[in-house]
Image 1 (cartoon, rainbow, N blue to C red):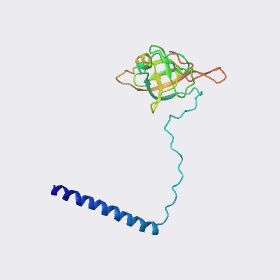
Image 2: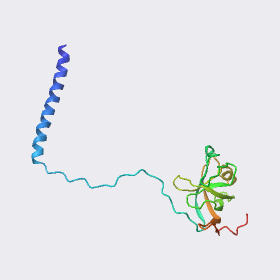
Image 3: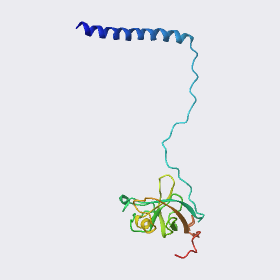
Image 4: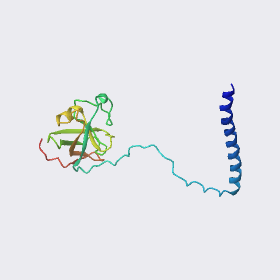
Length: 174
């Protein structure tokens, strides 16, 4: 019993002395301390959201990384109101207008497919187009590979007034 009280006493005493010492220092510092400057006003932090890029109706060629829809998206509603068909020629682009018909070429394999932009995405950084799984396989993007560098050449680009603008691949033969 005596041993327990010896170990607790110094600890209790040191805590008491420390709190008294801090109280004394705090009152002394408060009298001589320089008032702190107010913190600069900082704009509130908003959660990161993907920026919404402008729709590109130029019809110009673009090169970047393509990926493909995961199978879990099969049958889900796309931006144009249709259902995602894993065996169709549908694709997603953040910048091409919905309804754009384009030729997508895998730069490594040279294989091409014609797609129609029916959805928005991809939202992964650095990707320019998501393809249906069958279209991705057709141009050489396998599930194991996952992504590939592609050239997207618009064939027909819908304009805001409902007309179509010929794209850079409008005269290519497939």
